Length: 320
Ligand SMILES: O=P(O)(O)OC[C@H]1O[C@@H](O)[C@H](O)[C@@H](O)[C@@H]1O
Image (cartoon, rainbow, N blue to C red; front, side, top):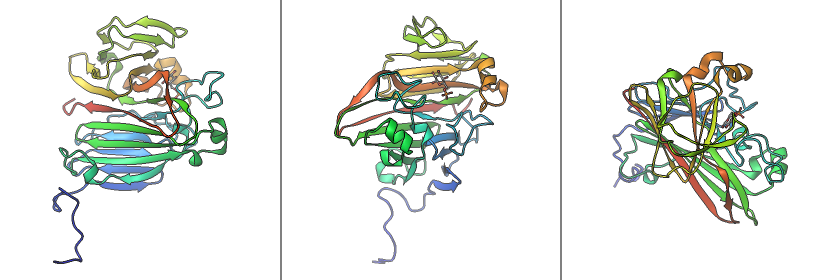
């Protein structure tokens, strides 16, 4: 036996081309041999690009997005943790900025997962999983003071064919319990906001943040976005994906969730878009819609030593 040769990973033919990983500045890019790529910025572990095998970009990224950590990234998939929106007074998160610290902190790249840990049904040339970590010792002093719990987050970004999965594991390393909210603030790239509809929200309760946080019931089977929209849909059925389709009935994105039962639908529309210094071009609100899977209408409580896992899978259309 030739002991100089390393054994190949279990179940993987050595002749199969493998996904490639490259690093440019703060960004990690993974490319699949059959095409398709994902790019993650270490600031916030923010996914900034997701391309299908055809090369078509699926995420909206503002032309003025800050990619150097000076501000959260305007576009892609910023991760909201441990609080959604402006923190409430009299809560452990009350001194944190809007949407928490995860999107404002520099994460560590933990590596590309080995083929053994991916689903057996997916061969390693079709799937790549990137893991990122953040713990309390990696936070700025200000954030450590503002949220003094010991924790570890592991965020996995899994690209395969026409789907992108993001999964977060929250570990409580403190000696006391803590509460958190979490959300994947996904900016989907679309061609024309007037030509899309959002389905599977009918009959769901939502809080309309543009209407003094009043509560409503969604009547529409196919929601059209025609003005500033900022709604928190609550208590969605775990097995029913939120679907973005074109007005001629093609599914563009189907977003399924694991242990995330709320979905925020956000579009700033013309005036707010213009007012955001990092949003460009001004009329790009027509080319994006945020469909944000999360757990934000209540708090998740995590006991000392326990962990929680949740995530989303976005399936894009290969034809659209
Ligand atoms: O400007 P930010 O902090 O990235 O937030 C963008 C939007 O994020 C959405 O999730 C919120 O519901 C909106 O209220 C908010 O305006």
